Length: 88
Image 1 (cartoon, rainbow, N blue to C red):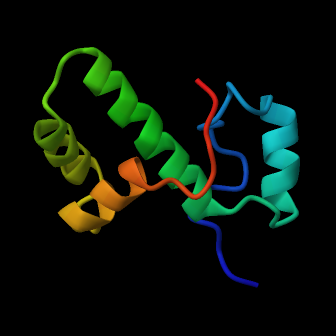
Image 2 (image 1 turned 45 degrees about the horizontal axis):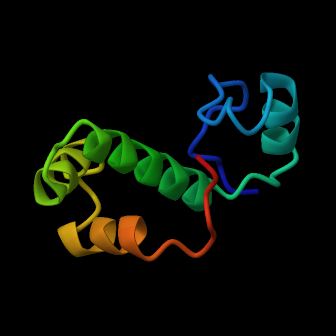
């Protein structure tokens, strides 16, 4: 079985969507899609920076510092072309 990028009992990165117990249960069962959680967090951080009047390009550059393994265009696609609609 592959190792999750999240520790088995880590701090819940999406407490606005799932409480900690549910998150850890789903994580332990391998139900959490780590890429989707990452993309959700990236979109949320991007929206927050834009609300603070940070230019879009600068916001993407800051996100690249947090996720150096992602290309600029990859982050741009995540924030501008989400597969699912996130609620605020």
